[in-house]
Image (cartoon, rainbow, N blue to C red; front, side):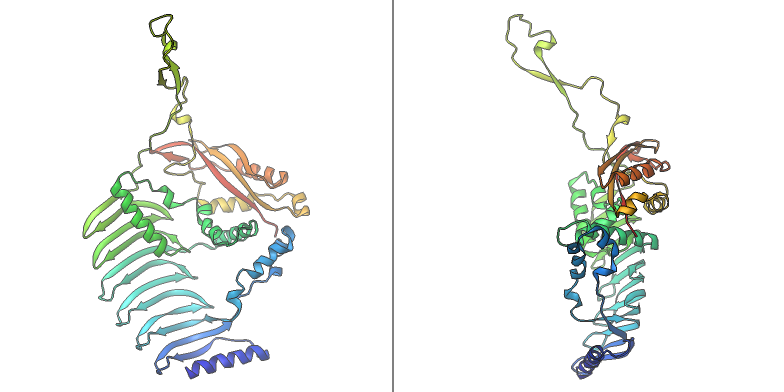
Length: 419
């Protein structure tokens, strides 16, 4: 404890006296009983956010908006934090290793190994610039495997799109916390809110999917792409098994209870469509040549019949289907297309106009774009350019319902950001 106190006092003195640049150095820290608690490198740093670092906010928002950015994490910046660098090892109070791994300027990189207090391996997790990558495995204190997950890190291009989207969404709303906007980024960019894609048909499936959904929300890594198998064991027996491909649910999802399989749901087989409520017209008995008595009062009994000239199923425009339409190459390719093809109107640049134009359009069974409309307008200049660039898109991969290509409505935000 004395050595820890001396380290903090030394660092504080450097900060107060304006000493030279703080650099990571070899450090050992100890518990009060003298046992090693940490070995590695770190430097004390602040990660403060200044409003003047974001000129785009000053150009498009009043001062009160920009001030919010400087205040977002003010409490976390009251004291400096430790930025770990290089190989670091943390220890339990009993002297055994807690976990060890390598940091690059405060970011986890490579394999981190975690241990139980009894010294047995608890988990092995791989990171790529702080994102989960590859296989994550964990074991209980008896050495039995408990989880095995598979992830893929985001690409640099997607990271850039996420950063831009989060920034604009937070700057564009005054509703308190920005966390819900950050959570919405993934469904907005990938159009893959997997929780809404699951459509259980039986009580067993419903209960099983609820168990998996609750576990996934609480235990899966949020800042990576779920890609591969996710398996969970309890006391050495299978408990859950589910699969994703680029964040999309695929394969057979299973749940066990006391060693018995209680949910076995194959998501690769198209789910049968739910019954659709059809609009019906009614006719009275009098319209069906009366009741038989020419002076009888119509009793008002009605019978439902299908509407005349009902459109065939292929002509219906769906708003949600089992397999949503997709730009050729996926969401990342669509972002690249928009970045390369949007021509920011010169007049809009001159007037400092920016924002999100939200469009809706129909992707036909053949992948053509039809009926492009503006749902949320920003300015006629930006609205017109957003419509132009979407109409010029190449053919999409059409949406499918029950295994057949169908017309599907698609909503797309087109972001205009002044650099």
